[in-house]
Image (cartoon, rainbow, N blue to C red):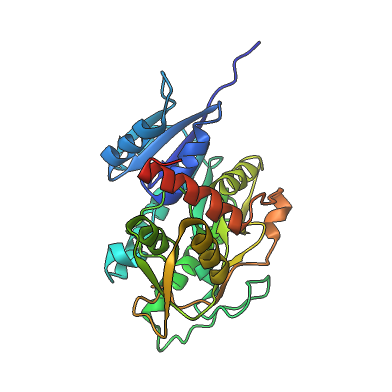
Length: 322
């Protein structure tokens, strides 16, 4: 019987939160060889050493991106981002420069080396704009006052520009996966999101400060996200954008009630908090645009499932308690 050839997958930004989840699931499946690109290869190797039990690793860690054109890939997955507000510290130029730099690297590979290679780029629900009072739909519009562009709108513009550019390359296999909210056991608790702040308060036995807004979020499970990529991989020719959702969104009150009950979380409601999101305050941030069903994507996990399962693993890893 003829041995099946491994599929070569290049992952840009391999030290990122989303990339770690993808690596975790890829290494549980046979038939793949991973090319892991990162500006922080030592951190990638540390992560791999913490989880990989293989005697013969099915991956290679690249230091930087200078060797991209030397290898053959069936798929390129870009998980590169400018980082959270806590990390880029208000340098919004990185939204533009970092996105453009690595997007052009992937496009150069498709144009110069292999037009058959699929390119999956992680986009964001932020593409719909900052004034989210209802779920995103097929006809949702992004309103931008072009003469008074606010910093909170920069990322939305970046994602819209990137996706429009990708659709213009209609003869190339390019897929934008819009993720609204994401959480996993590999989260960096320094990121400054609501859910990472909450985890920190549980670990340090501190009181969580939160405002009175009962926001709604959609936390896609890392395995569902991995399965969305597998669905894209199975398509012969594809150039499109898809909203990636969980099976059901979750409210902040549901999250607070769960952790108060299960982990003893203490919280205090404040009238106003200073740390507003870098892309604007969004009360309702999830999608009802189901185009992803056209490629067979149907999420298994709800947002509550994601919160429960991944927070349990994260807390066990950090405290050593089962």
